[in-house]
Amino acid sequence: MFEPLRDTLLAVDRYMHLADLPSYLEADRRLCALYADPDEWARRAILNVASSGKFSSDRTIAEYARDIWHVEPCPVP
Image (cartoon, rainbow, N blue to C red; front, top):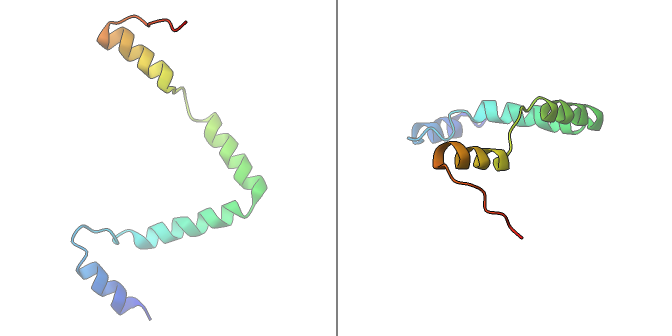
C-alpha cells in the first residue's frame, strides 16, 4: 500500500536518512514489547549497567589532567 510513497522518498533521499527505516522500526517494535514487560526490562537494565565497565567523566578528566596536561588538582575549600 505504501510502497510507492516509500520508493519515492528513498529515490530523493540523497543522504540515506530513510535507508535503515525498516530496521529502526523493527528495533522500536522490540523495544516497545520489552518495555511492556517490567520484569524483563528491569533485568536487562540491571545487566546493562553491570556490564558497562569502568567509566567516569571524573576519572577521565583526572587521567587527562595527570597524564596529558600534567597539572595538579586545585582543591576547592
